[in-house]
Structures are given as structure tokens and as C-alpha cells.
Image (cartoon, rainbow, N blue to C red; front, top):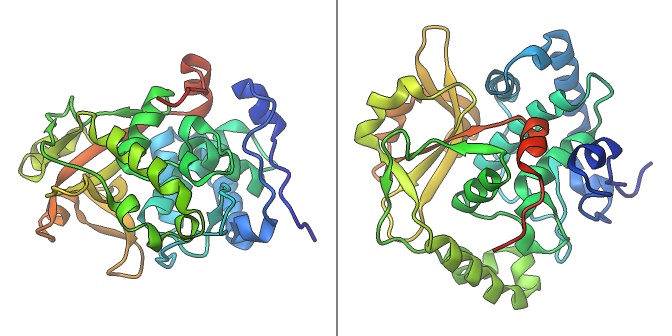
Length: 309
């Protein structure tokens, strides 16, 4: 039985021009849960030829295959000190649901067969961590969707469509959730010296101009949203920018739905049309729309390594 992950995929090293990716020395059973679910996804992907689909449709195919997966919080809090890329296919929250769907879809582009959990972990590391690399420290993770968008767009992995779709600046906002409630994080509780660095990250994010599409405007632009786009739900503030996240899914009749890991439903579901979902909760103010790009094409055109501000 494997006791540790050797996490330096030669394929990714070749593609991204790095000798190795994040150093991981946590037990394999800690960083990857759900091998049987992974194998089922691989078999379904190969039998239905998901690899031939465009990235958005491929991401939706994975997302649909994950319907019914239980909602589970804190699946990334896997150690008291060491931060490592991880995957839990037995339970997801709103963020891990979309990133696993996207990561698995990107993984299919990298190889024609022989997929392993390490391949998916590599895609998760590329997406989840600042500049695409986990250095073993909690602050290397992108903890806020606004920062995830910013960092991934700089590296050519996504395109933020929010402003071009009529987005307006979100004024009077600030971030302090993680530095204020640091005791809620297993990592920060055990490493309180990281709290000032987290506050600096929050302040840096808040200094940027961040856009949203007000929910009253969403029906007018829904036709421009594609299946597989990442839809970030914004809040009324002033504390924070986003409340929730999921995937856009256009059904056979052309209706755009919000597909997400729902805390209320307790599992991954295809919900009502997006514009209707936004009016379910008063705290929702609008959306951000982000379109992922293939990892290989993005890396070769934009470069995979970007230094931290």
C-alpha cells in the first residue's frame, strides 16, 4: 500500500517547463479520497469520449457525472501544518465541485489514456495555488474566488468575462473573513503566525477593482454564457465579494441552469435557471462569469509561472 505521493509528473514537467511541482509528503490516503469514484469517472469519460468535447462541454460532462455527490465542508483542511493539493470525490463543497470538474476535464486533454489520481492532483495544484504551485504553506492556496480569478487569468488559464458582459465595479467592499475568523481554519489555528500574511493578501485583493453583473441584468446576458463557464455569485457586502460558486449548464432546450454543490440540498444538483436562482436569496447581488481555458494551450501561450505581487 502506498504511504506517500510522489508528485512530480513528468508530463507536466515537460509541458510547463518545471522540474517538479509542489512538494508533497502527506500520506496518499490523506490527499486523495475516492479512488473508486475516480475510476468510474475515467471509464465513463473513455466510453463516452469526453476528450473529444470542447473544454466547457467536457467540464459539464464531469459535473453531471458528479450529480448526487454529498455536500461536505472543510475537505481541504487535511493537516495541521502542511498544505498539499488534495481531492475528495466522496464529498465536495461549492468550490471543490467546480475545480474537480474542471481539473478532471483538463486532465483528459493532457493524455489519451492511463489516467491516475496524480494527474488530477496536478491539475488541481495548477488551478488552486498561487502561480500554480503549492509550496507546502497555507498562504500559497488561493482562498478567495476573486484572487483565484486574478491569478488564473494572469497565467492564461481563464478569461474573466464579467466586465465585457456589462459588469460594474463593486464599491465599498473589504475582505477580512480569514484573518478575522482564523480560529475556524485548522491551518491558521495551528500556525497563527500566518494570520498577518493572510491579512496582507486580503488587503491586496480589496485594493483591486472587482466587477459584478447585477442580478437584474443577468437575464439579458444569459445567452452569452456558455456551458462550463464558472459562475461566481456575488453578495451585497460590504464584507467580501462572493457568496457561492458553480457551473453554468445549458440544457437540451437551451435553458441556462446553475449546477452546483448545494448546502441546502446536501448534494450536487442541477438547479433552476440561473436568473431565477439569484432571486432565491436576498443576500445575492449578481454574478461574475469566468471562462476556463485548456491548461496546455494556456501554458504554452501565456506561461505557467507568475511571481506573487
